[in-house]
Image 1 (tube, rainbow, N blue to C red):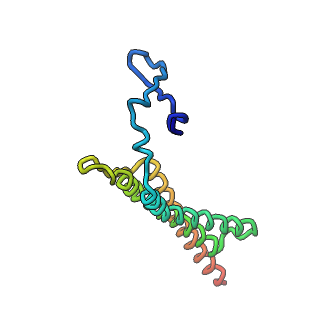
Image 2: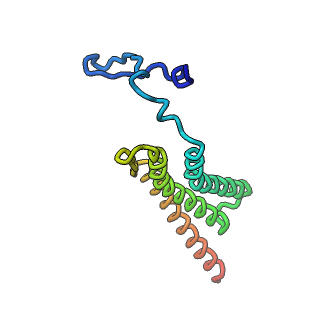
Image 3: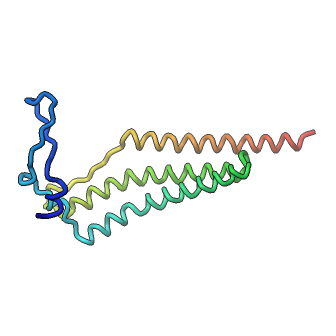
Length: 161
């Protein structure tokens, strides 16, 4: 008995005849799960390399936010450095989200490239999550630009008598 048979002994089965009741049926004999989970080492390396760029940009964004919070902790709220850190973190998250869209395409191809011709596929999707994250990143970039312009106006006003 394999680990898959132990970990996944039942699937939840929905049927119109049960009127929304959940019945558990043992269907592992009907579905070949082992073939889907059997990835070669090369495929695992490909998948790790596919997720590496978005992970790097996400980590850089978190590191930049950490630096921004340490500046806020010191009491520097509206400085050029904090505005640049805010803008840089938004750019990192924006690039990360764009990479995740491309990453999903590469994942789907990598997982199906062992299939026979005609049953390989590429999944392309742009979900509400992607849209909201991209929109939020662009809004933060816009806010950082407005803050930078406000700092320029403030420095010009300080020079006037």
